[in-house]
Amino acid sequence: MKPEISIEFFPPQTPEGVDKLRTVRAELAQLKPAFFSVTFGAGGSTRERTFSVVKEIAAEGHDAAPHLSCIGSTRASIREILADYRAAGIKRIVALRGDLPSGMAETGEFRYANELVEFIRAETGDWFSLEVAAYPEWHPQARSPKDDLDAFVRKVKAGANSAITQYFYNADAYFSFVEEARALGADLPIIPGIMPIVGFTKLARFSDACGAEIPRWMRKKFESFGDDADSIRAFGLDVVTDLCERLLKGGAPGLHFYAMNQSALTKEICRRLG
Ligand code: FAD
Image (cartoon, rainbow, N blue to C red; front, side, top):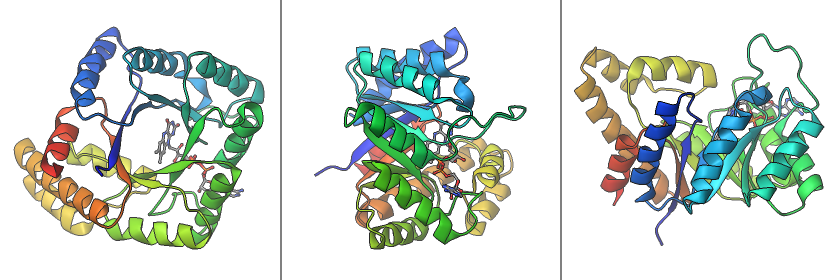
């Protein structure tokens, strides 16, 4: 059986971005993803834009999974969003805590993602299939790996159906996380998040912030390419394709692509994977 893939977008800010995403989506739809997901700015900053992209995806006949981050939100506002999604026939949500945008002081009525999962289950029963985040290299704010794993298991026990990981380039971190989660009774599918590599400088900055490690051998190689975009692209494609192959061979149930609203790299990786 072919492993399922899913593909993540962010909601564009401009009409040109919305148009471009339509083209990207049409190209990526050829890969027959199980669903397209759309990110959500914590505090509700992208609420309308996320909903609008999700409705378009659903109208095109694809499964759409809005992300929903709860930090900075009230129960009443999350309840409204859930009602909108339900009315639009949406059946899947990626349930997250999110990060408070800088300058926003109000943490709102939810502290952690397990509280959001509990709330969605209490409000809507089994209507939504819920995906939660997992961190094979540990969340940057986690007090310890054990605490982070316990937090993950709390989300599972609160009612998550499936998990998507933060991206990583070290397959062993994923296998070890899955083994530890299983030992604690978390037997849901844990889908690796895959970040195709467009450029190195931005990726390095972003990885530092979100706690994803770029191994030294990769970092050194990327640095040696300087501004040579073709070499960066070629090496990035090789590395990510090898990672995906290893993950699937090792039993990963699917792949979730952080496509960053572009189609070329995700398509090429999937083509190479056959
Ligand atoms: P949680 O599971 O709540 O964990 C957050 C931190 O709190 C962890 O360090 C955990 O160990 C700790 N923790 C949990 N419970 C407790 C407790 N009871 N006591 C003490 N510590 C605790 N962000 C967005 O804003 N929008 C998005 O659309 C978005 N999409 C994402 C999609 C994926 C697949 C992933 C992996 C991440 C995404 N993020 C998104 C980023 C995510 O919101 C951040 O990583 C955020 O910092 C944590 O969210 P979480 O849902 O994992 O939080």
